[in-house]
Length: 113
Image (cartoon, rainbow, N blue to C red):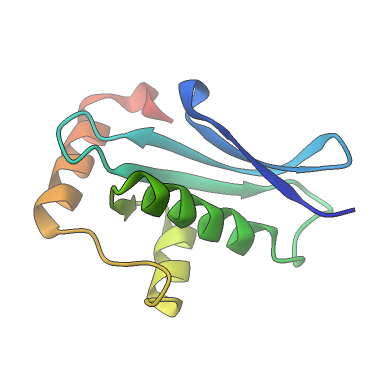
């Protein structure tokens, strides 16, 4: 069965769903100040589902959502940052000021993830 990606914006989660169950997710928040970037803070793949490309699929889908909305991605999650570095054609770098604003927002509110 194919993995599907579901954006649960209010919960701050992008879910990877397979056969009705969640097999992975990205925890994220929307930057409060314009340009309202999507900020990835943690990527998880459930035990037993590792090594199948689910994490990479999540990050790719996350960048796709941001592109469709016309906003940058700030990959504060180490996995998302690593994926972005390996796929610069699919993961444009966010402006430095946006990255700093995202870090400041995360530092000020630990409940964001």
